[in-house]
Length: 319
Image 1 (tube, rainbow, N blue to C red):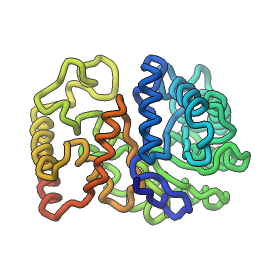
Image 2: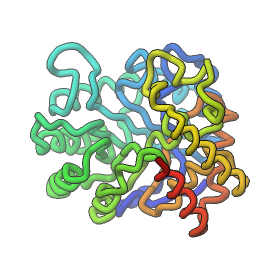
Image 3: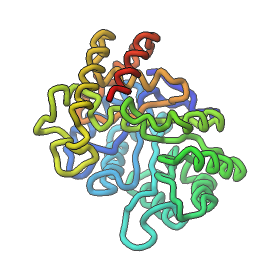
């Protein structure tokens, strides 16, 4: 495993980290979850990323991870970076959503109880709250660190301007912003406009999620929409209408490029993100240990020639 420095901090994160957004909830097979986490740790993945609402049902991913931590990894706590987040809807009433100090503080206490630990390594504000003063939200992160319930503070899904302001507030409080977690993939490049420059200037690390665009950047959709795929299901983030003829054309062209690199499309998509030194780590999900092991091979070739990059960008810009 390759370990990269997270921004200007002293913390190193694995180039590939494991996200528990999908496939680790109460509706999923527990032994499969356990196998994936063991495979990840044995491969050198030290960072496991959670959030209060991961499941379904919400909170169950933290509970399952806590069970596995206790049974399989209890003796390795000091070798792990465990993160969680609060910011999206979690419980009824006015105090179970967004970015108030009340919600973030209560949510972290609940997360620690579900996981069965005294502290998390990174606690995130999961999304920018335009209706709560940023000083309050960042103050809640600083409070968590000063309580000893988190070692580092992070933000996720924040636009560039809010990221810069959040960083300035946290720096003045004495708890620098460690990391930003944005959505980023070949098909979703919004961070390239401003955000990557801001985090670089501020000395903030960057760990990206949805690197495979909810499965689009895999071989699953080369011939259309499989009946058992995410896009075929009525719920979820990937919709049928997103998979247009133009998108399928791009996917197949990118797959041709991946083949010339001796990589799968998914491996190339992850490697493409890791080529940027501003990207500390890529969060991958997994539905099996085999899938995780295959995606870990992305690190074997993260070099892209100028010609390859030109073909990739031309493909992504096709109409």
